[in-house]
Image (cartoon, rainbow over all chains, first blue to last red; front, side):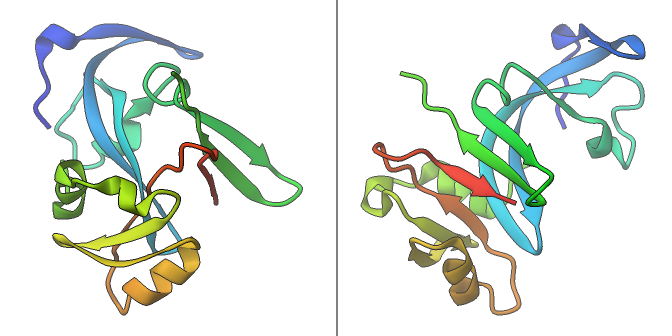
Length: 89
Length: 66
């Protein structure tokens, strides 16, 4: 990943504040051996150890870049997650 | 990090011909297309992992159910 120090911002979570790089990544959902295109999404990458082998486990998607483009519904009764693309004109 | 499939998708022209359909991309070619994701996957997979893409139909909401 090419992470730019100029993009570092503070991210707030339930456990407190921490620094993240902001970048755009191409996202796919992999589920039951299927790879499904989601597209380019703005993400936040924790600043601590961004070269760690498991860094992808810590990449954050947020309200801008993902949840403003997709409606996500968790239906526990049917055991499904529904992802609907929101078209904004 | 992008895959050959995602790069092909990014550069793909004339996506509209597949409007409302799923397409399966392996490498730099479309290997299957259709209305149902599971049917497209079954046609395309054959031991490999194609990238499945839904080409938007302007008149319908795109929904993926996991």
